[in-house]
Image 1 (cartoon, helix red, strand yellow):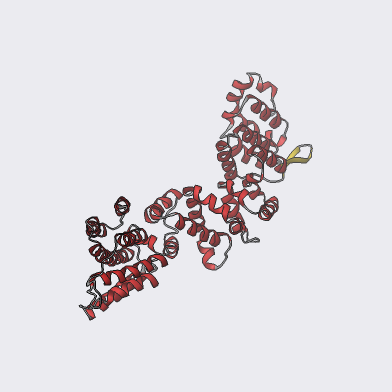
Image 2 (cartoon, rainbow, N blue to C red; image 1 turned 30 degrees about the horizontal axis):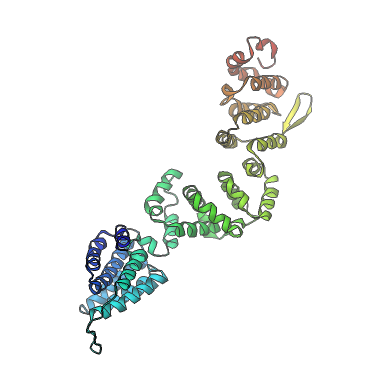
Length: 436
C-alpha cells in the first residue's frame, strides 16, 4: 500500500510541492498519521497557490490573477487571520475551476480531519484526535490523484483557455508541424483521455455545426487543430466517435465551407466514415455527386481506391462532338487534386491505376489550351514511371486526338521520346507521326 503512495508521489507536478510532501510521506511511514494529515492539508494549500501562480504567470489566466490579488489584499488586511485559506479553497473551486467536485469534497473532509488532528478536544477522553492508517492513506491518495500530480491546466476546465489560446495564435504558425509542436508543448503533453475527448467533441461542434461570426472567423484554426488531435490521438478518438456516432454524424447541411471541411476530414481519415450514421452517409453521397471537386476527394465512398479512380475516369472523361474534337471533359482535374490523388495512390499502392487515369485525362483534352495544361501536370511529372503498356496507350491516344498533337503538340511530346524509345523501340517516330 505504501508503495502505491510513493509511486504516485513521484508524479507530483510542482517541485516545491514534491519537497513539502516528503514530510507527509515521512510521517506516514513512521506511523505518525496525525502529523501526516495536518501536513497534508498544508501541502494542499501550498499547491493551490503554486498552481494559481503558474496559471497566472505562464498561461495568463485572468481568473487566477484576480484570485491571487484578492488573497493578497485579504492577508495584508489581517496578517494573523487564516481565513484566506478558506477563501483560497472556495475561489479555486468556484472561480478558477481548479478543483473537480470530488477533490473539492475530499479537501473539505481533509480540512475537517486536520482541525480535529491539530486542535485539542476539551470534551473528549482523547485529548487529540488520532486518525487511523486507513483514513490517512485514503486522504493522501485522494489528494495526490485529484490535485498534486496534475498539471495546473488539468485541474480545471481547460477548454476555455485552450480555445482562447487558439484564437490568439491562429495566424502565427504557417505549417501544421509548427502548430503541432506548439500544441504539444503548451497543452497536449499534459492532456489526459478525458481532456482529449472533451476538446475534440467541442471542436467538432464549432467546425461542423455552428456558423456564428466567431465560428466563421476561427473555423480554419479549429479545423487544423481538429486534424492534429485526431492524428495524435487516433486510437482514443476512433473509439470515442464510434460510441458517440450521433454527435459526430451531424453537420450544418447547406453550408459549402462546412461541407468542404467535412469531406477534407473524411478524406484524411476515411476510417471514420463507416462510423457515421446511415442517413449522414447517404446525404454526403448525394452532396458530393454534384460537386466535382469534392467528388475527387470522396474516395471513402468507393470500395477501394482503384474503384474510385475508375469512377473519376467515367465521370470526367467523355466524347466530343466534332471530327477534330473527338474527346472532351465533364470536369478538369486541377493540379492540386492531381497531387492529392498521387499522395493517396502512393499510400494505398495504386500508382499504376493513377497513371492510367492521368493518361486518359490528358488524351481526352478537348482544346489546345487544355492539352497544354494537362500535359504539364498530368504527364510531365510522371511519364518516366509509366509502364510499357501505359506509354503505348499514351502514344496511341494522343496521336489520334488533334487537340493533343496540333499547335504545340509536336514540341510538347518531344520530352517523351527518349523514354518512349526505351520502352517501345526506335520506330515510334515513324509509327506516331502526329505527335512526333
